[in-house]
Length: 270
Image (cartoon, rainbow, N blue to C red; front, side, top):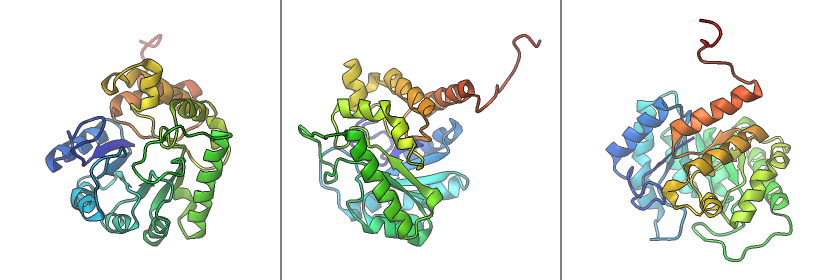
C-alpha cells in the first residue's frame, strides 16, 4: 500500500505530492515499483490547521477519479475518517476506506457497505482525530487493540461491509507511545489469530525514530526491519512511503517462508 498524500504539510514528504501532477507521477512510480494499493490522503495525521470536509474533498476528490482512469487495475484506498468524504470518493471509484481514527464517524462503515467498498478498522487509542497521545496508558495495549479493532470489524460486517474487504490496523503511534507500538509489533500473532487480515502502517513513524534516535528521513532501515518481522509474523498489508524497498523486503520474507520462488535462477544452473 503506497502512500500518496495530497497535503502541503505531510510529515515525511513535506508536501512533495500536494500538486496533482506530482501526485499522479508518484502514483505511477508506486505502481511501477510494486504497489498493489494506492492510499490517498488529504489531511496529515498530526495536529495542525483545521481542514474541513470541503477542503479535504478539494484535495482528493477529483484525484481519485484521475487515478482510477489512469490505473484501472490498482486498488484505490482513501485515508479519511469522514463519511461525507467517503461517500464522494467511493462514488469516484475508491475500493477501500482507510479509517485511521477508529470509527470516530460511525457512518463511514455504512458508506463502505452502501458502495461495496472495503474498510480498514484501526485502533487509535480512543482519541479524536489529529490528537497526539499524552501519558497514555493501557492495562494491556494489545488486548485493547484486539478488542477495539475486532469490534469495529464485526460492526462493519453487520452493517453489510463485505467480510473479505475488512482489515484491522493496530495503529502504530496513534494513541500510543513508542513502547506500545513495539509491543503491538512483537505480539502481532495475537492480532493475526483474530482471523482478520492485519494492515501495518509503520513507515518512518516516531517509534522507529525513537528506537534509532533518527530523524524522519533516516528511518528506512528501521522501518524495513519492522516490516520484515511483521511479515514473518503474519501481517498482510504494509502501508509504505518507500515502495520499492518495501516490496523487495516483503518478497525476500515471502521467499524465506516458502511462499514464493526465485524470479531468476542462475546459481548452480548455468
